[in-house]
Length: 160
Image 1 (cartoon, rainbow, N blue to C red):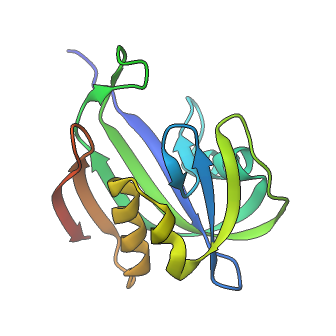
Image 2 (image 1 turned 120 degrees about the horizontal axis):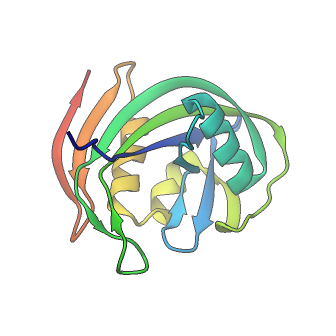
Image 3 (image 1 turned 180 degrees about the horizontal axis):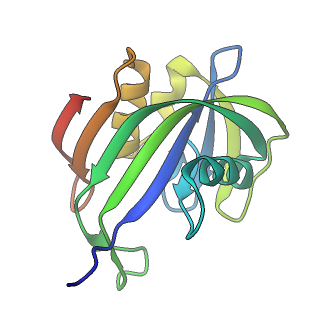
């Protein structure tokens, strides 16, 4: 039996007390909310805390899960050679508890953006869709299946 290969990733929508959302600008993805892959042996909460700190300099408290997302398309990475496998992403609402805004090897800019203006900056359709799910969150977990390449296609959208 061949074992399946999936990337597991976490994303954090960090909102401060003034209603601003933490965004980072990446080299390949433009403006996004911070997050990334869970490393071998790492739990989801530690991965999210680490990724947000690495990408933005901000320390967080994780409040709750708001979405589970499956990118079921396989596509080529930025090197045009390596296959990127299917990905499972879990998005969480977070609150800042410390740290200082700073960039990293992965980010070129880090900013707090008014909640209502975030969609003016995010261009990636999957990230826009997941952020809209945050704005519309009413207590039920969002579940979506989509593909991002060759172009974004939402295949399923429901709550669970």
